[in-house]
Amino acid sequence: MNTAQVFTIVAASVDAATERIVRFLNEDFGVPINVVFFRHFHDNGASYLARTWLVEHEVQPAISAATSRKSKSREPWNGQDWYVSFGDSPEGRQWTDGMKYGFISAGGEKWFSRTLKNLTPGARVFTCIPKNGYVGVGTVLGEAKRFDETTVLYDGTETALTALPLVGSYRHEGDQDDDLAEWSVPVQWTHAVPREQGFWKPGMFANQNTATKLRSQFTIDQVSEAFGLDE
Image 1 (tube, rainbow, N blue to C red):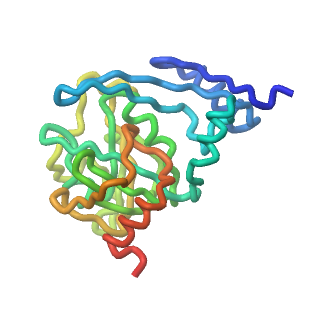
Image 2: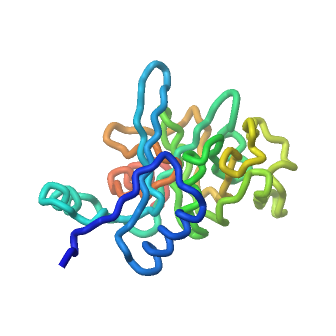
């Protein structure tokens, strides 16, 4: 009875207490409750509506025959691989830094940094620069932290990111607030290439979220072959 019921909170933002309650019910007791956030933004004259979930999940429970068919056709997640969008910008973060010092980052708004916190040590990340291509595959070494609190293993020494000679800028207006700060995750790259050598083929996976489960076997296979990961 009521096995197809799903509780979905639609919001622009929720407070910390609500997040804890939803995660507690969803992750600890399997209650089908989640929060979906929508964000409207413009880029180069185009208008976008982006969506992200508070709790990452493999498949939303079916609530109709149509959604049931859609869920069944969705590729299963292998439990390891994640897609990560690295927003390289001349005025902001630089992939040159991420590739050299071993990290991924996002921030400026909670929407951008939120999904980074779903990454756990041992996860494999396929990192893509939007509108450019995939530039790195590596293993997550630690949980997401504020950029100014993150350390990476550089030249065999645990070093604070802020102590390194970074090319990019990782500060945001009002970033004393965690929601507006840059957040980062240390990564050990298995293979990484400069932005100019980004790899892309039609049909490969891309997403507006900073981090999301990578289910596209086509994308995994193509990037793995291009980067020689199976050799």
